[in-house]
Length: 58
Image (cartoon, rainbow, N blue to C red; front, side):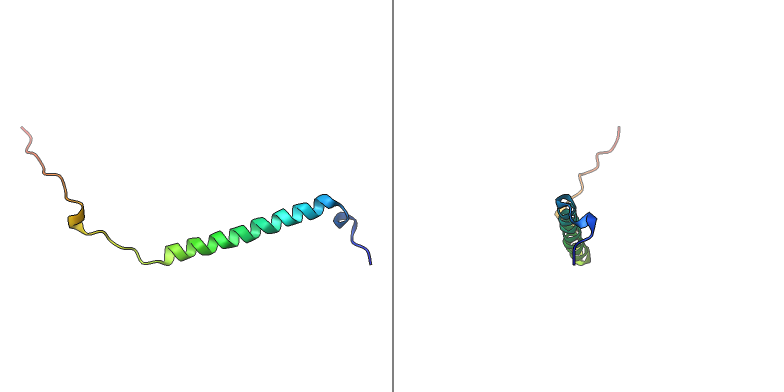
């Protein structure tokens, strides 16, 4: 049993390997982004960022 003509080229195997690498990287990045977005947000304390004193306009 021989491989199809398009798989007998070395460049085809390199292209498929790079494509698989990109798909795996995309899946890992997707999982990381979803994990970060599912984390509960921590609201900063309002006292942690004091508002500047408003000066009356003359």
